[in-house]
Length: 139
Picture (cartoon, one colour):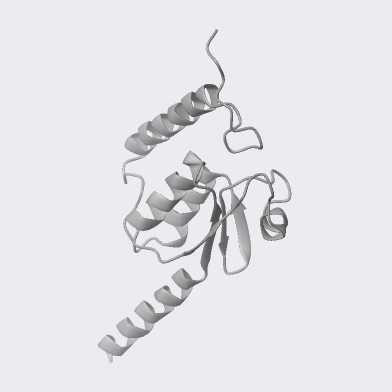
């Protein structure tokens, strides 16, 4: 009986995973961050490549505020911003590999480095995920 319940739980988890869709772009490091996290967690997902110069109606519908990638759609509900998506993946799929350490201090350190990386990417490549993929030139 316990074995059957275990198989039902595994089937339900697989069904949840199949309902994941990621809108992204090959040019977006933020998209790569989410893809890597989903693969580390062993989550199956559908990927939709976006042309940032001609954004799809689906992307605009799922992220009407920023109109940027990445956007994760899970069971018809949308989330934008890569760090928020990563935190959601840990919360929504606790049985899979956790992205952040269990210790509160170690989690804070990991978040610091995530923020540091974001800050450096933003200053080096202004607007890569926007409509302007041109790197900022150093004076």
